[in-house]
Image (tube, rainbow, N blue to C red):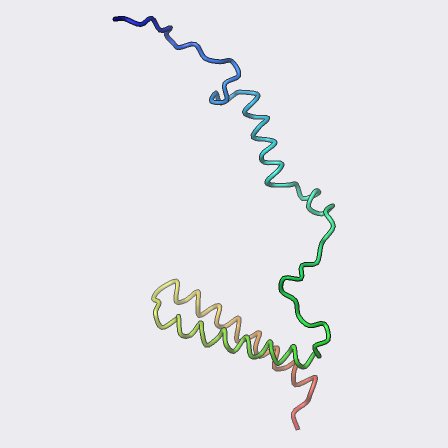
Length: 119
């Protein structure tokens, strides 16, 4: 049995599958505007303070600096343990991160020295 089909097949003029469909373009614009707001929209939105991760506002500067130094030292140890398992560019990148951590640790130690000078 032979079925008559037009060549090319008839299509809906507002089909979302056509590249120049007005409906598709409008839907895409709405989706992009919803998921990716403009810089002006972002700047106009008031900033809300997140309390998920907070630092005790009563903590002294010295306490914060000590915690910072200890955290940086821990990161440095972890990075050096990972470096032993890598080769090539990944190893070099991790060593670069390690150097940055070390500089931050030295800076934090200098802050501690200024807060409470060694005797």
